[in-house]
Length: 217
Image (cartoon, rainbow, N blue to C red; front, side, top):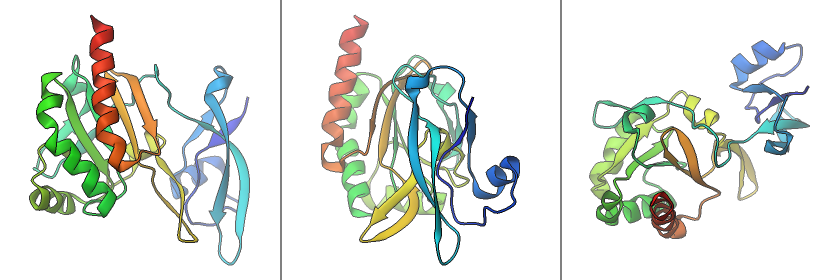
């Protein structure tokens, strides 16, 4: 069996036990036993000061057909949203890097403009970022958004869904949310798209929901 991890964030990794490394760096460890095809090799760069430690680890990734991790998160409107509240309905759970940035605004406004079509198939939309609820409230107000905006401030949901990853932009490396969407029904992942392209997102969501509806007949 192999002990595995998702990428780590900044911090010293010397003389740390697996338990303390997981606690201090926000790393989630898994033990590989079955389903080898679902385990992926990933090279992680762990910043440790002037240099960086590079290592290859085993990472478990969620796939279509897997059970979706349950969650409960605060929303910008003062309540809580939980996956189990929507049993029997398709849930469009989408993760985006940051509220009120260009790509995230395009993606959110496309969902807003097509919410009536999504309502016709009884779909629920939940947008998730690590922004505080105050920033999400401003995001809603600025763009008239008409679906759930949830704050994963402690990072537990983005880590559970495997979307908190090492990213590269303009020659800079940093940890952040990989734009990803999971369509879930009855607690099972039915569709997923990692590395979402914001302008193409709404067409994919509508097509996926239509396929699910047709398959249910």
